[in-house]
Image (tube, rainbow, N blue to C red):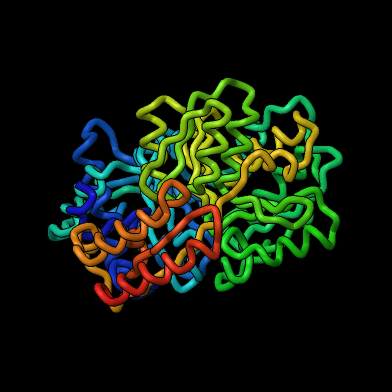
Length: 452
């Protein structure tokens, strides 16, 4: 069903500002389309929608457009201002709103923006609801009568509410007293939230990436660029560093030696040292083979889902499991919150550090990462059927079969189109870099020949 969608990608709707649907006229109608769907779902009372955003300058423009579209559909609007994506999910549920909207392009630069939707329970909306919004969007826009227009108000205490919630998820018997942490807020939505959370739990906090100007979000900082954090951890002699992405749903860490600790390793730590027995966890097709082997050795089942935290979430719900992650830093701790939350996930890892009395470097040492090489083959333009074309391409299938035979059980291959950009990702993983590099180059050349 997901392949039938015209506008929604892997994680909502995203594009460069001024292109595609990311224009004020289209965003206004998108808000109206959501209002139409909500009005059809519940006729008993006026629906309400929470709107939050990250710190990119275009957020103000699209916040106003969404507000207007929703009000024109007869929907009340609650404005949160700059807040992390998981905060909108949490507050949507606690305020009993009909839906939540986040204006963000996550880890992308400022010139991109996007729209993410949550349902009344604070979870990503279903494929069926995305299709319903698209169908409403394609209809002519008709306003409700003047007396039926929605109303808008700002929720001024939203940051404080969310800070207290985050603190409540930390359950170690001792606070963070004595720990020195460096926090990189990516000049994004966590800038005024995360430092307060960790300081109020007792940690000594050095904050970087906490001066957003609307343009510098994710710019040489945050979860997608850890160099500055690594340097700061070493220079300040911190116990560890924590980096969030622009909208706060991802987290990456750096140990006291300045080494990166990614989502795979964080998942290993959480599953291996959980306070309760862990039957299994969910990763993705991109998760390192070393994670799967390390967890299997501990008797913990491992399942690979499609890339995208919504698919990790779906697999967790299907199995009744609590922990899942993408190696890019989307870490799900469903025993604490029903969506990916960078701050909450970091607190759970710190809880393990405190309870075990060990460094993060020591805790992650039980997992040996396999070398994983990737090449992104950029296309001139994307196409809605690219995933099927990749799957059906005979030349590529033959090359993949030949490469996998050469790798045997010592490695694996993954070739997949990006859900957010016009490119095809080629990944080869194995226990020796020099051995897998020729396979990567050969496969990338086939992809370039067949699809560029």
